[in-house]
Length: 249
Image (cartoon, rainbow, N blue to C red; front, side, top):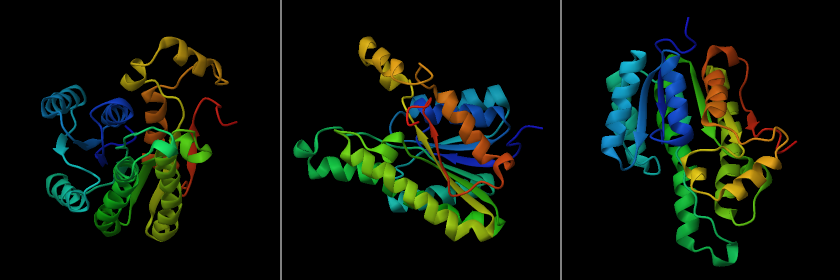
């Protein structure tokens, strides 16, 4: 029996990187998937077809901005109409606008808070309805080790990711009595398309500073996300789990 057989998941920002890895892992485990993307329609359609063909599950991409309150609410309405319910929500969409605080503009602050933190509020609030009706659900929010420890040049990103942890714990306390679980994941240095553009010497120095001596993969994060989405973690809620190779140990 596959871990997410016949379940329905919404995954935001799943057209690349960690989100894409999560969508692939979920589909492999029998999950029907609604994923969001912002711009690349052709790329999203190709991914939709690829997952459905390879794993035999129902997949639909939605061009939707998670930072837009009304759009997020409409997304959940559309997904319930198409799939019948929502069992799992993975709030993965996020951006960076890195710079030192003294140079950071109000726009750079607002963009990151809206895309990373407000989006989590928007989708979680919207998905409560079908989950409360079913008296079941798993909400998984993508934070970061930077939200746990902070990082110079990322005050906006760190604040947004730390906010996600506090929000996650509060939701766990509010919705636990309805059998709705809420957990956060804090990835460390994960090697994706974005890190591929960085200087190899810099990347290697980061790897060397990690106890496991390697960067993480999207699959490393996806494996934990799968566990938290499945009934295997039925007694786990209100937690933030680091996936960082020991970086924060």
